[in-house]
Image: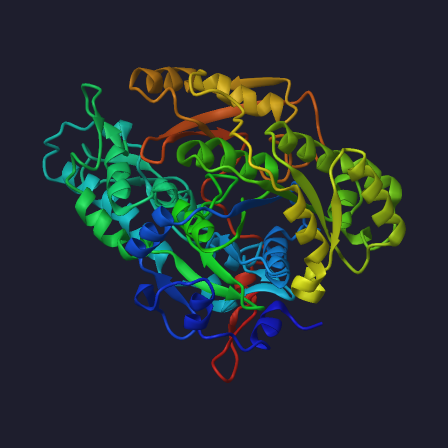
Length: 552
């Protein structure tokens, strides 16, 4: 079988101007980055958003991921291609890939098979420079903070209260905990997070304009003075330079699928350690350009979809018209206890047992009041008996299901799913999991008990005191952003399926005042991942003609 990269290179892409014209993007609004990718002028996007009625918003989510593969991004792309084939003008809105998983364990994030966005190698490696701008802005603020301490500390900052670390868009576990400072009196503990966990990434993805971006950056709390006053980028005179670094990046990026469907790819926070959604600007622009906007939220519905609804939609007033839950027979059999090496063998009992994971995601999404459809991403090892069994189990939950072959057939293989989506779309009022006035600890408990199946929540040393302090400082109404393993509803990644009665342990919390949420760090989740024993980077390189090879 050809690799994803080989399939991507076998297609001659349309010129980016042709892609733009298909959704009426004005010539003067297109800022080309070569021949097949571009940015769209931010001011033009904002005027279009203000002037146009919005299309239907389709949220694609999934079961808890396993090494067997689910194909959420692939399904997002295949569905959009199928909607376009059916005569519905459709625009994709996706996150940008991080270099961390590209060089690490997971690989890229541009889909697969015949359902990909291109240029695959450009999007996965650097793209149009947005992540570099975010990294630079974050680290500039860190440098200005430490520089202020070095030159006398006029603000009387208590170094022990500094919460602002540094970021890097590669996985490097050796930098998780560091010590910085040029003098004994300025030395303090710090850390490196991966760029996708940066609060500036979250701010970038939630900002609706350059003015909103600047206002959010101004609200970041980086430390406290010895008298207990919060220290912000305004105090450090850093806001202007940070906005300057981020100005061009805030314009959304335009590329295309293998079938020429316009794709806006912009921003990229992870859903297991951040809020997991592409930029608000990208989503609103896609809605203004198409009859349908198909977007995804990272990892399983317990993380990405919950945050899409409880954070992104709460802040913007957006709300999906339908939700697609992606699953595979292989992954559900793994949730049912099968080893990865045995997944090519038929096992109906393991499938039935593993269905509990999909069942909980279905019920969780329905609890938000959303119309739901399940898309089964087909693998060649699936048997007809397994498919019919899964179909009956899903339909017993009162939701439709479609078998999707987009990996092999592109949009044609996703036409059944597209037909169902157009039929079930319905406008509904937002229905959040918890109220703004809940105590932050109760918001955490609501997510844990209502969605995760936990029976109890425990807070680490000092967590309750931090949350109470956030309330005193005026942040008590912010939503919570759960940082938790993506592999399970529980904090133990080995608890597959739909565990119940477990305890969610919150070891720490972090305030993201600019982004507008409180991060709850659960279990052993890290905001700076490490590379696996054999990282994907070992296979990436150039061939004799200078072409990139080894990406997946």
